[in-house]
Image (cartoon, rainbow, N blue to C red):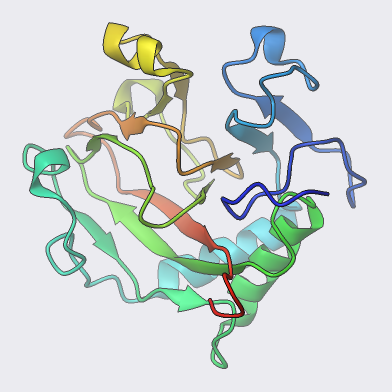
Length: 222
């Protein structure tokens, strides 16, 4: 498979350890083979087995999450009006102390055969507080983004949806595609895709996700 420059391989059907519910976001009818597929965000439902999901979830909930948006230098222009997002330490897949639960998750992501073999993955846990969200942006500074949702229950009226824009024209018109933070759902989107997270309700619980970024190696370095 060819390297796309974003840390993702060109999207083609690949063997997997199990049949996953796969959707190409923004593609008509959620079909699996459109000409737009290589650039569209990809969604997998029931990504981990129930046992694996519980293992990763319990680990995520046990982590200290005392890093703030200010600590991470998030742009004030996309966070000013939103509640806090508390974060754990971030690990690289090359780190000697990568937790086994994080390694399990990374192994399952690599089994999709969408991430370049020589790419490192940076990952950690985000705990989005009630009334939190983030404005429109792309992840150009961190390359491809991988988001995995960990809440057992998320009510529709809590909002907190991930909104993707298929094109610049759609973004300017405010026409996006919404993804609800459903348990055991994985979303992969390239750094070129503009997106945002809608306000979660002040009545919502924390929205917990495992957030990862693909960091391709260039010229022998990460």
